[in-house]
Image 1 (cartoon, rainbow, N blue to C red):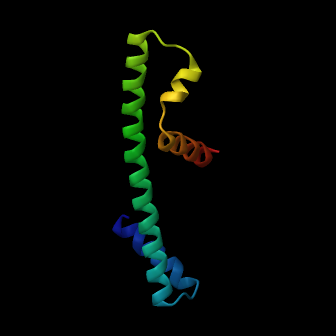
Image 2 (spheres, rainbow, N blue to C red; image 1 turned 120 degrees about the vertical axis):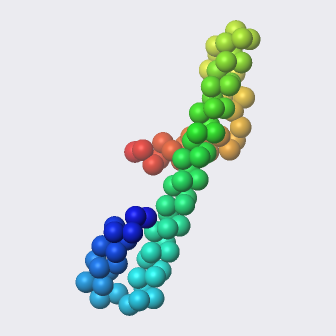
Length: 89
């Protein structure tokens, strides 16, 4: 979180009469969410690379059947795709 925006956020919380411990907890929660978002971005990049590799392999093998493609995706990848779709909606 940028320092100036962090200070503004703290000021907003102070105006809401939150205690210092509550402000600390809010900031910690926000940082955790930011880290989760960064991790998600990294996973998306990895997923894009995996999809590109799979697409290349499928082209080489001449496989164009969607059911075959789904079969090769891992459960973790499918879960990540579903989570991303929920975030986008």
